[in-house]
Structure formats: C-alpha cells, structure tokens
Amino acid sequence: MKEDRYEVRFSGSGGQGIIMAALVFAEAAGVYDGKHVCQTQSYGPEARGGSSKAEVVISNKIIDYPKAMKLDLLLAMNQASCDAYFSDLKLKGLLVVDSMLVDQLPTNRAVSIPFTQIARKEVGKELVANMVALGAVGYLCQVVSLKSLEAALMAKVPKGTEKMNLNALRAGINAAQKVDLEALPRSVTPEDEEV
Amino acid sequence: MKEDRYEVRFSGSGGQGIIMAALVFAEAAGVYDGKHVCQTQSYGPEARGGSSKAEVVISNKIIDYPKAMKLDLLLAMNQASCDAYFSDLKLKGLLVVDSMLVDQLPTNRAVSIPFTQIARKEVGKELVANMVALGAVGYLCQVVSLKSLEAALMAKVPKGTEKMNLNALRAGINAAQKVDLEALPRSVTPEDEEV
Image (cartoon, rainbow over the protein chains, first blue to last red):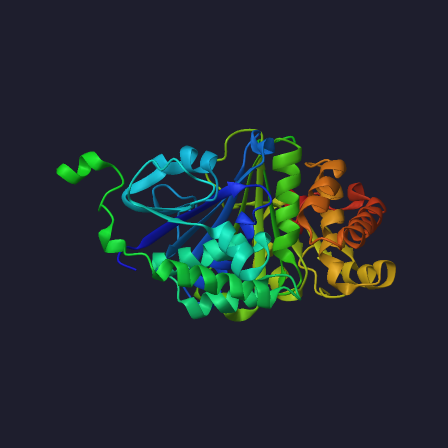
C-alpha cells in the first residue's frame, strides 16, 4: 500500500450482496492481513430506495475517521450507483463496474467486467455476482492478499455455500487478471490528463 | 429518542453472530424507521484474537462521526468483551449480558439474561443466541420499533432460517419485558449514585 489510507466503496442494488462483499474484504484485510480496517454502512432516511452501499477503509495506522472521503476504488454494480458515487473517486482512483448493468461509463479509467454473467455462466448462480466482483476488486486494488480474501470468504459466507462462493471469487480474480491497468488513462477526468 | 445520538456496541466471541445482530439492528433503524444510522466494524492487528464487536450509531440528524464514543448500551456476550468495553459506557448507559457467559458483573446497572440458554431451550438452536440478544436489546433500548426489527431480520438472515431467527428475536423480547429497568441503579458506577 503506497499511501497510508486506502478507501473502497461497494455499491449496487439491495439484494446484490454488497454488504457481504464489503465484510469479507474488510475481514481479509483486518483479521487475516493484520491491517487497521473500518467497515461502515450508512443509512439515511432515503435508504428505502433499494440501493446499497458499504465502505471499507484500510490503513497501516489507526484510523481516525472511518468513513470514506475520497475513494481509491469504486465498485458499481448498477448504473444508479455509478452515477451517484463516481464524483467521490480520487483523480487516480479506479472505477470497477458490472459491464452488463452499467452501460454509461463516466470515465475511461474504468474496468468493466460482466460479473453477473460470469456468476451465472461459470458458477451457475447469479446470486454470487458479488463474490465475482469481490475477486476482481481484490485483485485490482493490490492492498489485500488473495489468500486472505479466500480465508475470510470461507469463514464468512453461510455454511454449505463456501465452495460456490470460492469459485465465484476465483472467477472474478481470473477475469481481472486479463485487464491491462497500464493501458487505462491515468486520471478519471480527461482534463487532468492534459495538465 | 431523548438525545440526538444513541450508541450501541454489540460484542462477544467470533462465531456468535455479533455482526449480523448489529446489521439487523442498523437496518431496522435506518431502512425501516428512517433514522440516520452508521454501522461500523473496526479491526486492528489484534483482530485475530477471536473476539468480535460491531457498533451502531443512530441519530435524528446526519451523523458526522460514525464510531461510538460513549455507549448508551453495551451488549456483552462473553466476559472478555464485558471487561474490555464496560468503561466505554455512559454513566447512565445500560449493560446487557448473557448471564451464563458473563458471571462477573462490573456494575449493578446491568440486565443479565441467559440468551444462549433461551436459544437452545426455546428455539432449539444455540446459534440464534445473537437474535435472542438482539430482541432484548431492541426492547430495552427503546430507539427502534420492534416491527422494524422483525422486518429487517426477515430481509437479512439467510433464506430458510427466517422463522427460527424470528422466534429467537421474539423470545429475547419476551425475556426483556420481564426486566424492571426502574429497579436498577441510575448510574453504572455506584459513587455517582451518592452525588
């Protein structure tokens, strides 16, 4: 981890398992990698809308302020979340989306992977799209070890679903390994490229 | 809610479902009751120890600082958690413990209920002690509606376990209804009684 603080927001629709993905990510970094981690859900009076978000802040030091301020990585599992939270990304942050559910990308600095389709076709269950996405996020962020991610997943998901969720995680890692991050623009806003 | 901010910490051993209880509580207040809610897990390098804690902050206003500072209610599902966190209670805060797992009470301002025993004897499954405790916490704290608590539980627990978890929640509410809060000392530290 280059800087002291790394911030991720997982976002999507209710029922996509957004909070479970964030919990596994947080426990991987906190319990298994031994980092300082805060994992937060915030709900306002608008929370009935059916959208879901969860944040993870990872640090090598004690975390004073646990809410995300400027995101290093935003996972958006639907268009509404992408639109709502894109502006919270750092200039050099990374947008990761489900390519079948987000078709209007606000930046070219984005990784677009068909998480839900992979879950359905490769794992046989759409419900584990969250773990496919988590695998990709885990691989791309480079701040948690993949071994810790697998260990946290095995400990956290409902009994009897471990294998399926693990397969989903690994399918997400595989998909992300094909992405060439170096080929992406360095900044989420094109203007800043020219500075 | 008398004051603007109400803080609860759920604590115990890993595997007791502490985070699930906090998540249901948070969604009841945030999604169903429409309050401002932050729900946080913090992990440090010591997180491997097998203890588990989760916080919920509820407010009528936007929450600036999402971590708990002074607890209105502490649920301790084991002695280690009780010892570690008791000092974070407000003077007029309330300690709630599993009476079979916490035998050394640091204050008389405590509600002691055999959550795990109730889960085993009344619901038939020790694993749902977390929901028995949540029922009691929900009843005692008076900041979430019991209807919302039930709705959040039904939406949040794994499919197929709804009925069992709901029975556990209700058993916890029933147990808490027998507690006479007025009979407790007004303060967690006896010295302050005399002021």
